[in-house]
Image (cartoon, rainbow, N blue to C red; front, side, top):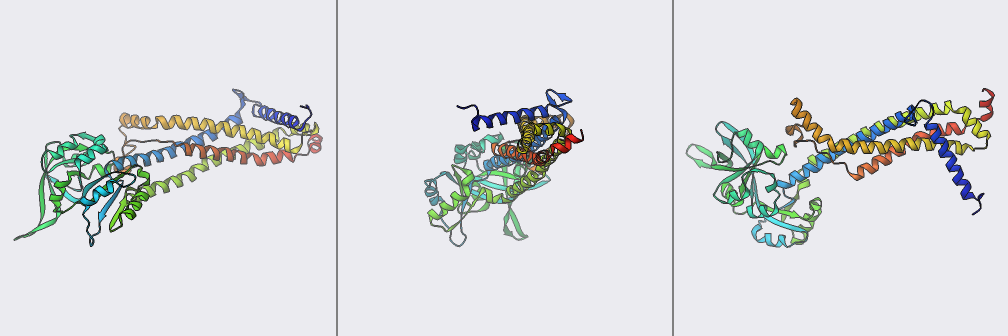
Length: 425
């Protein structure tokens, strides 16, 4: 190939531009081969990228942890009979279980009540479960801290309480408590609520304070007796993909011919996840301002470099470099700073994200602080989940802002007039 071909000429130009860019980055007052201003630019971008990734990772971890813990005790989807068109849910159960994407369908009872132990009273969410089916699913079993699900079948009116509820009532395994339901009985002294004595045989800890402080698990037949129901409240449906539960349960309803209500876990907790998405959006915009500040810092540093190197730029112009080549020298320099800062920021974000939960736990133990209050944030601990999508878009944004930051300095350098500069030297 001819050494003077356009391709070789372009390669030589590129090599010259990148060499000049490296020389300008590693100018006077160097630290580890780079100038102080270059290190400041790299550090500011790295810090912005790391902060953005860690904060988004905390939000992702919070959302993911919330989903996993909710799905341990909340159905993927539910199917309930319409009041004016009651269905035989027991007969429907077999048909639902053999539907596409359905892993299992279990009868359940869902109701509210009051529990009392000595002088302490608490409102509770009573959930009647099919014990054999729940044991096969193994979702609840992983969160038991005392007792077992099998104990609900050994005798009538055995219950498993949320751990926070048990602490609130001051009860433990084998203790008795009273459950009062709203439907009362008419007596000579007025309407009296129905009361049933229950025996605590286990405790469950999901890590979600709202659930752990209100949950009472009963065997489904016992729950039907307590609330005097002729059939379960509905069917608890588990799908192979809980994230597609909303679409799948609506398709299931169409296939079954309708005549009942359907819901899914994302709808029953819609406000929680909508608030998380809104918060993530706001935080993403606010934290992008950190990267914008870092990019503005790059503009200032590169403009200062253009001023310092205006004599060198004039000499390069007289040696034959075109204005576009001069501009690309500063673009290459900005790209190097932005890329290096982004890569360091991703590395820093990954390290901090991986260790943050342990650091927070250590601070809470060491100084008796409550950084993550389960009563406020619904979960204990600080989960962090940095997703590949967030890393990609954060890196793309940081490098993009870095390139934009080079435009003004590059255009300024390209517009310098060599004759005027050299006349004043």
